[in-house]
Structure formats: structure tokens, C-alpha cells
Length: 500
Image (cartoon, rainbow, N blue to C red):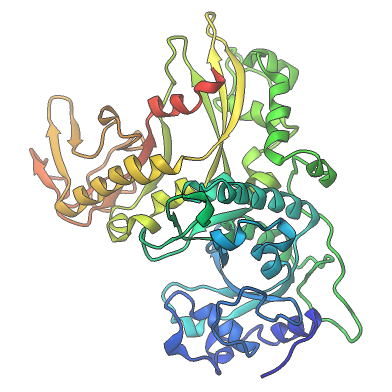
């Protein structure tokens, strides 16, 4: 077994793997002992002579480098991280009395040699190829935000609230679920008399990984602290600066030494509280059309401008890396929210194959953070800005009402969706959850056009034949209009009542 004493030696060994298949780098690996989902990671470790392990420190302790393999996929938007980068399991008992400097996260992941491989769905894992090997340490601003994330997670651990953790409550460093199912739990500190908590691991969020892939790794940028090319004799790794080519909300990292990122955002937005949409539009020089109407996205545009951003707020460095979704909410004069909150369409066949703990819906709510920007309608029909807040779905709602609704949806799809055609109204009704069921979420189409025709772009195939009543002749037995989950507006209003 080779011994690596320096980071430079580790990285140069990683560079030698670039262009090789996972089969080539896994020659010393015992494939039988590797889990189905960890073969790529085990192959990467075997390239450095490291056997499958669960040690507390870095894989290559003397060099102080952790080894991680992570998948890249090609999309229409460019190279994208296939998933979050899962780091080490969080031991709620061991972490209880740690600070950031002594934490398992920092001791294990301060420096990482990342092996980026090309994932191809219909290709055997042995044929996937190492595309890049990168010696990675965190840029200054990222590290300040990650430290704030760790402190938030740690606060929950110390308060005996690890069972309330969710990945979406933090920015870049998440606490993702890690286990086969909901029975994968861990004890909290014995002094707390707290219930067992779902097993979680520190992780770097998917969008964070995608950002560094696009902006640094595959942009071929050589910056101190992040190395993609080999080290020459005598050359050493330098410390790292901040870098990002898109718009940044915070360009001076020292700000984050005085205030958390979330507090900074809310404080900036609240400088404009009680201003109307029209006065804000005038202030930021956003013009109405000839009919006096502002663009449909005016509220989102104003949220960006209030934070000094000219473009899309969700595409700024910080929001993109943290997977923060901006949701502008309008409260009408009668006190109701103008509309329910929609989420992406789902594929029926995919949903029935999922288990709740790893389902797309659960992952969406557990891993995402939302910025609610709230406007209230005035008597004259104008709207005024009243406040903002960051929000993640509480674990108590996610694991009870939302889980029940998802399971009910899966059951409906497996048993066959009930479809009823009403010829008088020329509409098709179904037995999916409705807003009136008051279950936090419901299901309905997002698009205005409905279709029950096979292979129509507005339709999706069902896993089982539908139970039709009054089926028109040209309608399919197993295709129906695409559907998506919606958050009920009554529930959304309850989440922002402190701003009203």
C-alpha cells in the first residue's frame, strides 16, 4: 500500500486516474463488500490503496485528505452534479460538546480529493470514466457560510432537537437523511432525554456542487486552494480566495463575520417595508406598459432589486449554491392568499417506484430552503411589501400529514386512478387529493391544457389502467394530464402569519 504524506502527493495520484474507467481504478477493490450505491466511492478509495472504512478522520490521515467520488451528468444547462455530496454520518452524542474546529465535519473534510466521474444511466458502473481529480478546500466566503450552517445544526443537537433537523434549514452544508428507511435512527445525547432522531450525514448540497463544477472545475479555473492540474516538484497548495462569476449578494466576505447570511438578507429587504409596488418600481426604475401594467414577475423583480441584484435572485451565487427558492406571496384585501404554491410535475410511474424516505417530494421539502417575500393588497388595489422570512417545512408536518398525503397518492396510482368525464362541462374529474381535503398539499395540473391522449406532451402515462366512467372514445386507458403537488394556500398563510 502506498503511503501519502502530503496533499500534493495525494492529488498527483488522483490526476493519474483521469481518463480511466472505474473498472481500471478498482483493481484492488473487493467488489463483493461494496454496497450497490457506493461502488464508485469504493473504487476511488481503492485507487489510493484505501480499503472500505468508516473511520472518524480523513481517509489519508497523514496527508489530511478525505477521498470522495461524485457523479457528473450532462444537461441542456451544462455539466451538473448528479446529487449532493454526502460526507460523514453525524453522531449526535459525539458532536454534542464539539465546536466547529473540533467537529467531525471539519476534521474529516477540511481538504478533499474529489474524483468527478461521468454518470451514464444505461452504462455499467465499471465503464464510467474519471473526468477530473480535484484537490478541494473551501473558498473563504463559502467557509464562513458553512460554519454558520454547522452552528445551526449543532444548536439543534445540543438542544435535543436532532429529530427536527432538515436539510433545507441550512445554506450550503446540509444534514441529509442517511439510511435505508425511517427506522434508521440514532440516539441523542443521554443527558437530554430526547427521542431517537433519524440518521443524518453532513453533506454539500446538490446546487453547491453544481456551482463549483460549472464555475471552477470544468471552467478550468486554477485558483489557490482548488487544484485540478498536477503539482510540480516543490510546489505546494496555496490558500484560497473567493470566486464566482455570476452576481453575488455579498461581495465582501468579512460581512459574514459580523452577521449571519439569513439576517443580512432579511435586514436588507426590510429596509423597504411598507413601500408599495408602484413606489418600489419607480425607485428601481421598472416601467409599466402602455396600459399601466407592470410585468407579471414584478414582485420577483423587486425582491432582486431590493438586494442589489439586476438578474434572477435564484441564480446568484449564494441562492444557487444553497438551493433557495424565492416565493413571492400576495395577500388579497379579504385576507386570503391569491394562489396555492406549485411544485414541478411528477411522473406517475416514477412515484410508485419510490419509498417515502427517498422520495422526490420528501427530498424537495427536506433539502430546499424558501424565501417568502410577502405583499399585502391595499384598498386602492395596489400592493405593499410587508416583510420576508426564510422557511423550511417543519419535520412534524413533513413526516405526518405530507407523508400521509404522498402515501395516499401512491396507493391511488397503484390501485388505478378513478377518472370521470363530465360531458356537460367537458372536464375530467379524478380522485387525487384536492385542496378541500385540507391535507397541506394537494394534486392538480399546472398547465392550462388537459390531455388524456397517449404520448401527448401535456399527458403522462399511468402505472396501471385508470378506472374510467364515461370515457370518450379517443381518450387513453392509461394516460392522463400531467400533475404536480401544490401547497395549500391556507397552510402557506399560516406559515407567514408572523409577518402579518
